[in-house]
Structures are given as C-alpha cells and as structure tokens.
Amino acid sequence: MRFLSIFAIAATGLVLFAACNSTDKLTGTNSRTSSATSVPTPADGVRRITVTDLQNMMSRNEVFVIDVRSEDSYKAGHIRGAKLIPLADTEKRSDELPKDKLIVTYCA
Image (cartoon, rainbow, N blue to C red):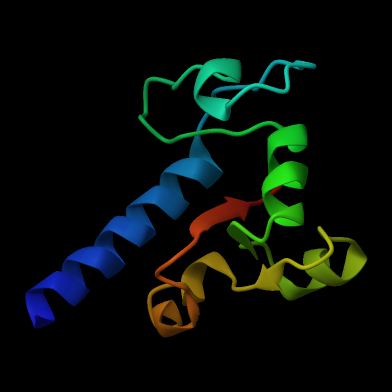
C-alpha cells in the first residue's frame, strides 16, 4: 500500500512538472467535442484541455483545479474555484487531492 502511495505521489509530481514546463503551445479551437479530439496529445504525453472543456467540466463538478504558481501570482488573479498548491508543495499536500476527479493544473 505504501508503494502505491509513493507511486501516486511521484506520478502526480511528474504530471505537474511536465505540464508547467512543456514547450508545446495550445492552438485556439471552438470545438465543443471531447478534449481527446479537440486537442491532440503532445509529445510529452500530458493531456491538455481547452478553456471551453474546463468550463464545462467545472460546471459539472468533474474536475479539481490546482493553481501551482506562487501565492503572489494567485492573488493577482486565478481561476475561480482553483486551489492554490504551489508546485514545490504538491507532494507534501497530495492528501488534499481528490481521488474521484480529474485533477487539472495550470501555471504561467
């Protein structure tokens, strides 16, 4: 069980790190289809979603949004409902992440 927890924490950290450091750029789209078809999976394997997809998922309470920037950046402006968990703190605060929702991270 402990191995599974360590693996989950490591995987979460890897996803967060890759999402914040990717050089891939999203292209604008007006598609309202599933994010799997609206945004191709980039070479790093980290799933991207469109703003419209995020809004729809948030309205259905299907996602947990994490802002991994600094507290100052968060205070300057953030997605309503997003929880501030700075990237450096994600591992030690992993117990705050739900297991039944898609976790969406964003950063500048």
